[in-house]
Length: 280
Image 1 (spheres, rainbow, N blue to C red):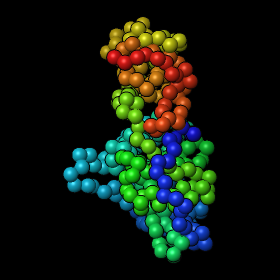
Image 2 (cartoon, one colour):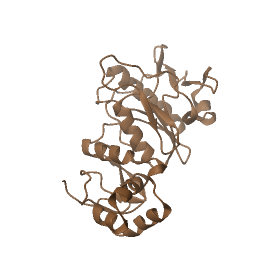
Image 3 (cartoon, rainbow, N blue to C red):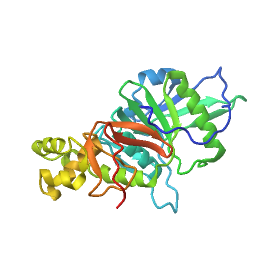
Image 4 (tube, rainbow, N blue to C red):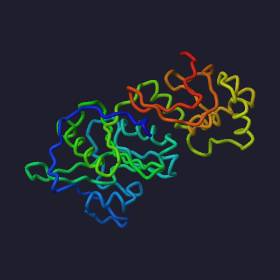
């Protein structure tokens, strides 16, 4: 889980009234607003199962607005407010340690050092298999949201530190890595898994790293086998480097997916990953 990219931007020491503490505002299963002490809510509430506490804004003139991401992890849709958030959802959806995802499930409320009420709704919530969680924002660039967003990030990080969770302003992904991940994501649904005998044959064909097309042709017709290969690459039964463009000669091998922190965001490889392959 240490593969989540570090925070971007800094607003200096957070201005929070430590005596007042933090509160969480969220919607119950019938849509009623609930306000609860932050530490209590984080123990009792499954934020990954909640609807957004507030809608993502629709910005006039923006080419891409709020939409839905179908999660292979949960089998449900997650609301995404931007392209940047959708990219981070792809990364987390492929992380084998993530078991739950939600968009804007809770509003964090606190008082600053002057007693003024402040609030922020982190864009993304991810639950990990060990019960801990990640709250995250997905800015399109490091300064997105201005000083208010950076100050809110500091407060959100302080709130998460109280309970052993993490908060991050996730950095944008490298363009090649993001394009490769988008391609594999198109095959994340179980319908692309293929017949059991095909999946087994693929694991045998790529027991040692070999060029993608060579291994595919050893199993069957590319039109039939390639979707199953991409599905296996998404889910980590097979591994490939996503640092360079995918192509028919890229090396594919065995391996379970793991996360690695990169300078441009979270990267997913395999245990046998890091295969070279060159560009097209």
